[in-house]
Length: 146
Image (cartoon, rainbow, N blue to C red; front, top):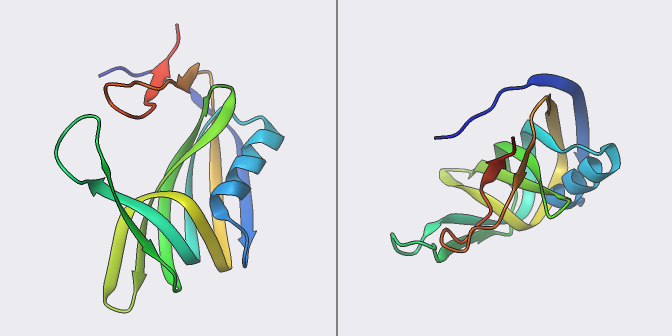
């Protein structure tokens, strides 16, 4: 395990409106505000989304198993923002429910807001970290810089 410590910097409260793409809006906010390190929580509803719900097999690098929904689901989520190749990268895991059905996974690709999503972002100051692609793992984990 590696770790670093920092402090909470700016705090943002954002509203993502009906029809907006959640992941695109978060990336635009991070670019516009020059957020390099942050964590966030969100709640609301999503009309359609794509999720990675695990690897197809227990191997590295993983071959993702995809799930999508095209009807409204209530969601809660937690995620982070770190730069990858100089661009903010959103990593968001959500739990989404509709009726007796629940879907949990890493939201990627399309993510259309239904009515409204509320997002609370806590910027992290005093750390130097970014995402660096690792071909053996098949993704870009957080790397801490000295």
